[in-house]
Image (cartoon, rainbow over all chains, first blue to last red; front, side, top):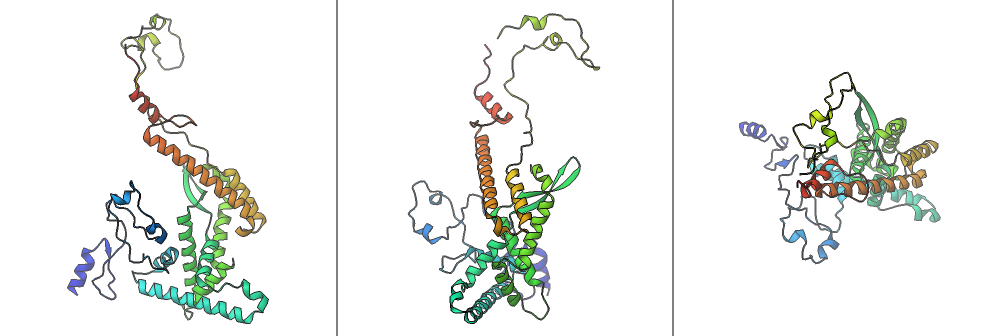
Length: 228
Length: 126
């Protein structure tokens, strides 16, 4: 026990999973790499291209790839991002399990729809769960956000355009939040599957959240020229 | 050294400009020659106009008409995104030029740019 307490005390910048004690220590924030280090290339088409004479990758050191990054065929950036956002206390195994079961559920639901429907309607039903996942994120993505800007001692809520990275994060966060708002008896992966299918069809809680944010931006449109 | 402008050194009558004492020009230039300095004072850039406000308002009105369904306002959204990305590009180019100490083809030069140019080409002293 003394060892465990010492470990938790000394590792302030690290997050240690104390529930199931293991020697694995995961870093919480900040890159410890020197800024000279370059990001690794994971894209296969990019890797096959020959390096140019003056390519910085010839002369500069390159970071090691993260644990979720691979050159495997099934690699998907948004999927790994979603799993990481859903993760709690570094328990990635559970997070990944929930996501995979969710995809399984989506496939099951869509196949049921497919077999119930008539033959002429079948071509319109999407059966690939990953396509539904991407469509859901695309539909949930907000265009604007509100930021607090002080002008003459008064704080205004000003609508500001969002970057793509930021809006993707918001969309994923909303989907996870709305999947967590459920009964105690229903499982996360069941709820998440329904949420994703709804979002892909432009309905559901997370789409509502996006519309609410847009409404707030609309009500504050008078301050849009305060942006900078 | 350029010739000192004689009219500046002519003693003139004291004229009341403000309620505080303002020394006449001949007094301020008495001890130092009227030569321009090789630097200008650092000035904060005046607050710029926010880009794409018009496009944004068009988008808002479309959203309000169509019950905030973004799918129905694809045209307005595309126009807004295009405008915003263009504005971002212009800003990025300007910042790059500023970092190099160059002046772009458009707009006013900042105090930083003027100072870097004056350091390269100072005012002739003789």
